[in-house]
Structure formats: C-alpha cells, structure tokens
Length: 415
Image (cartoon, rainbow, N blue to C red):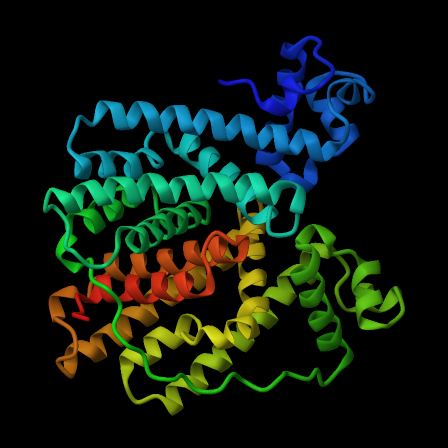
C-alpha cells in the first residue's frame, strides 16, 4: 500500500509507525465511521499512548485524511491491475474496471465500499476532506470518460450521449450499487451482474429526452406538537452537521426548547435518529402521493418520485437527500437501521416496477424492459448520483441528466 502523503509530511520520523496509526484509524472508520476516530479510541485500537498520534499528525482531521489517502491509493492500485489484465479493448477495460470494484470476498467488497462511501458522505460536511475526496471521484469520472471516448471512436458505443455524461451515469450506478450492498439489499455478485447488464445493453445508452414541468413542491410542513418540532429540529441538525452532530443539546438548541424535552420524547439518540428518518420518509411519501394526483403520465410520476427534474427547485429537495444519505451511513453499522433502509430501497424498486408496468400497458415502453434488474439499477443510479451531487462532483445539470438518463436507459426510451 502506498504511503499517504500526509504521513510523509509529518516530522519525517518512523513512517511505519505513522502507517500503523493510519491502519488503526481505518479499522475505526470501518467499525464506527469517521466520527469514531477519537484520540482515546485511536490509542486503544493502535495499542499506543494517547499522545503518540500527535507526534506524526497535527490533528485528528489529518489522520482521517491520511486514512482516506491510504485507502484511495490501495483502490487505485487495484484498478490499475484490473485494467491491465483486461487487455486493449476499451469496452473490456470498462467492464473490468466497474466490475472490479465489486470483486473479491463479500467482506472485502463491503469494506471497500464502506470506506469509499463513508469518506464520500463525510466530506459533504468536512471541507478538510472534501477537496481530496472530490478529486478522487472526478478522477474516476475521467477514467470512465477516457474509456468511453475510446470505445465510441471504435464504434462500440452510440454517438450519444457524450462520454462524460455517460461516465456520470455509470459512476452513479457503481456508487449506488455499493450502497445497496451495504444495506444487504443485493449481494456483491448481483451487483456485478447488474453492472455487466448495464454495459452489455449499450444500445440503450441514449441522451435523456425533454421533461415537462413537475408539480410545485409540497408546502412547508409545520409540526402540530412538540414531538414533531423535535424531529424537524433533528432533521435541520442532520442537514447542517450530519448524524455525528446530533446530540440532545444540539437538537434542543435548534428547537429552542429545554434539554429535557428531546430526552422525554426520544430517550436515546438512535431512537431519535430513527424517528427523524421516519418523519423524512413520511414527507417523501406525501410528495409522491401528490405527484400521483397531479401527473397523469406514469413516466413523469416515475421521474418525480425520485426528485424534481427542474434544476431551479433542486435546492428545496436537498434537505431530504442529505437525510437519506446520512441514514445510509447509519445503516452501514446498525442492523435495525439497515433493515429499515433496505425496506425503503425495496419499496422504491417495487414502485418503479409498478410505474414501468403502467408505461408498458399504454405502449410507452417495451414490456420486456420492465424487469427488476432495471428497476434496481435505476434506484442505484439515483442513490449514487445524489451522493456525488451533494459532494459537488456533479453539477445540478449533470445530476438531473444522470438520473433522467438512468431511467431512460432502463426503459429503452429514445430521445
């Protein structure tokens, strides 16, 4: 594993000990997330004194960054070997590159995606980590774009969409499948099958078609009692600080209430977080129900069931997207949250299948395209694209194009 640059920059002594500390931090992140990297926990995990890490690193944030660089370097070496073994055909290299992220034992694949998505989502709230994480994900876009450009030049992929736009879709699909693995919604082998299916169906790689204007967003939800006020305040804290920032004090401060009140309604932080997630899901379902009454076209309902496709209104939906990704972070380590998250992902898949069936009934999409694998890929693209958008890797326009294009891919729709 390549030595992280953060270690090389620290006081120049005993880099092996510095790597030992980084490896301990990686184990903590896998077990407890980035928020678990604390001085005492790190010292205990590494078997060193609490002061030793500060001989090699200025602050805990630098250790987290070094852990990212170490994991990213290992992943880069793995990808380089994968591409080299695939030969000279760009489509074969593309397939090998994407499948390679899901290759290995179930534990290896889970650890790989736990680290990548934990860093990706943690960087949404941490400017110290964001620049480096964004650079890594943009490099992934560039790798895919280069392979797709070469494949298009050889006539192996259609002329539309542009390689960069398709790279956004495929990277979103890959990251979303990682989330589905971490929630036990699919297995690593099934993720490989879904990736191979997406690449093999190159004829459906088309540019997204024009969209009609979605219905107006739901009006702001006002809590009717103190419990809802607490939950709405919790959601605000999650959006601003992530789940690691949720404490009874931070929620009480946001709700402008006594410290005792959040504890009264929700005795533990896990119960508070679970209830806040349920509250957010309730609001999402209300939005879907509203779209169902205002949109006759099942394709438009399918698009709006994920998020508005109008870039001008994306900001209004950011809160719900942040809460969703933060709950995915919890689900990586909490079995109860994992079960609830898996149920929600499966519900999205079933809903997509239902609307796809409506499209086939009216002749708007080929019946043979309405399959569970396609619905799972659509959910994965939306999930992965959301994380990349919140991180800043995808612009608003690229985000909209990725999720609309992902739906078009699976339905086989012409532009």
